[in-house]
Length: 210
Length: 326
Image (tube, rainbow over all chains, first blue to last red):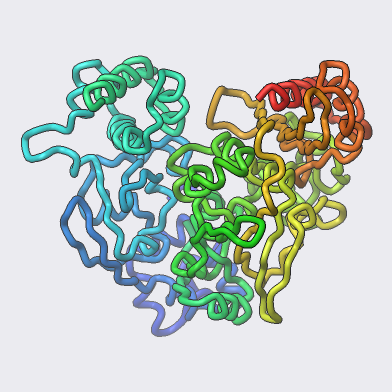
């Protein structure tokens, strides 16, 4: 807690009586540490009930890589955090967490999206595919094989997002030229600069399909 | 991200009532802008009203035009056969914005509502009249490279970041909105507003109103069109300047023209004077040059966006040329 929120140490004036037990929960304490403004605002407006309410978890049913899950999440949990923190599917990476890098790319109902900008609760009833769902048992997806063959990565952090984007790109039917592939892969940043090899990998899979 | 309460709406009236009941509530559609702003602490809703289940997703023919549901995604619109065939300018503009992943999430209504990319709006440690009325404008005397040339005020010099909005302005679209008192129609050109004394208001939508659809009129600019977007990298960046150009040609003579700029004002900047001039002129370099001169009348640059005074007219000439040749 490097940046202490400007609230009384014991929480007096913020939460009272029965709320005491509530603030013992670590999630709430970390929320105070991370988001002092909202809690302060809530305190000013005597909205402690409301602050408690928002920690209520909401049930979500969704299918990930063919497996059905029924989970409970806070409304503010992103699909990315649900996959990584609650379902232990850590192949999907958190890069910028703001929809700018593409490391968190997954498929929702067959379409590629940034899972960092999708709230888990909005994915009720959806079918999600992550990098863990591409291979068929021990047999890698052709795009995974092609990335290995063409060295489509160096550090590998962006790779799962790149591969998920590339698989979607071929389905979208926009990989006719090098330029078109570059344009359609522009939502996936690779700071090692493996772009030329990524394009080669995509071209190989594209050519083997046609 | 700050905690908030969550409501899942099943009907448009229910969604609107949720906003009436809770003055701190916001609608949530694709989330590509709002969730980002919430993570940054720029927008702090107490409640999100999820409207993704509402029946506003369809793209359908209407007498003499096409209706885009407010929840149709940007990629669904850009890739729709009727849009590609009859409104290619809209496809070009949408595909010039964001990334494929974001276009798969972002919606028509959400794109219309997206906030400016002014860095002072995003940085909560800086003054910004748009984020916090009467706190001042960080951009006016700051690093204002991305900022407006037209229609700005001393309260705000931010620009609207959307490419889709530029094309919908050029195509004379109409917006259907619904509020607690019923439905109304707004001309797309009147949907967004100039900052004036109230830069906190990006548009003329009332807080409790919901966008239902956007109607496109009968296709009249479907052949000679071009969307030119100038940005800091080849793809996946916001516009420094963009130009939507569309002409109707009779041989080499321009019968009618539409010309709208993006990245230069608080709203898509339609160039009426240049459009009027273009009618009846030959589609040639001298004509485009004069149109660009007319378009730039009244432009005012700031310390770091002087380059736009050269970039913008050049972009207009190039876009008109490419549209005429397409």
